[in-house]
Image 1 (spheres, one colour):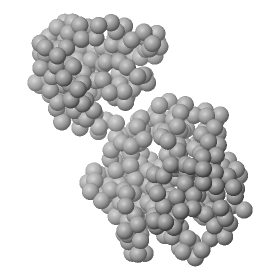
Image 2 (tube, rainbow, N blue to C red):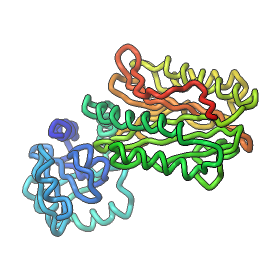
Image 3 (cartoon, one colour):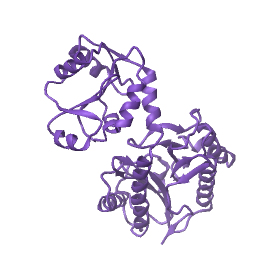
Image 4 (cartoon, one colour):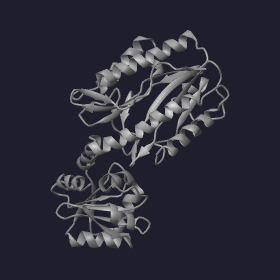
Length: 358
């Protein structure tokens, strides 16, 4: 974490003396501490300071290295004192996260300091978070291992009559019992006609024979997310269902095959999307092909039609094309890939061939 703070301090422009970091995900990225409060002061010419309240102070003192941990009292008075101590006249704020109400409070509380948003600093932080360290990748890998194991387990649990909510609950329970800190997001478990909704909410609908069941879920280890989607079936399927599933699988494999350092994100999207379009289902694939993840479940860059970001070694993104036929069914298949210099490593081990459960 000390290295991250030093890198950020070095990237502050000449006209910026310090930076205020208040957003939880950025606090976690730069300190390693997940908390619901806290203010990080990054100085260009002095060690960083982390102001944290009594709920987290003891743990912060023990776990945080590379910056001074201070028990928070009257926040604005303390920030003003530290700014005055280090001659801060102009401080940057997080333009990507700070809302107008928060900005107004800081302006009122720190009248002697000019608070500005610098897009180049926000861009530098985004870029730092895009490229995962070996430690970050290890955490994502560990979270994905639990997710893969949960999928193996749930395939033995799903049967005719189980409700979407029961299946979602079983997935959540399994992940917690096997080391998950918390879910990466609210689980998506949708079956039958509900599976045409990409982000549908698990309900009381029971699984019926001939249904597709789409499950999108993940967990967190060391504050880092996993994410996986699988679509399975119960009972015999129609020819159209088989055709759509195979189309999505072929598109996903084509997308993964296109991933490597030096390729644009939109090129990867096109590799998957063009195959679906050629099969006649282009209008039924409305979302992007994938997204990065880490501390947050959705981070830049994304495999989308418009994202021109060039893939670099160390990025981790999902590859998750889908086809959704309203009122009928939907299919999505999602893996996580770690981009390397000569291709990518698939972090997801679960079977992707169509599983038809008894």
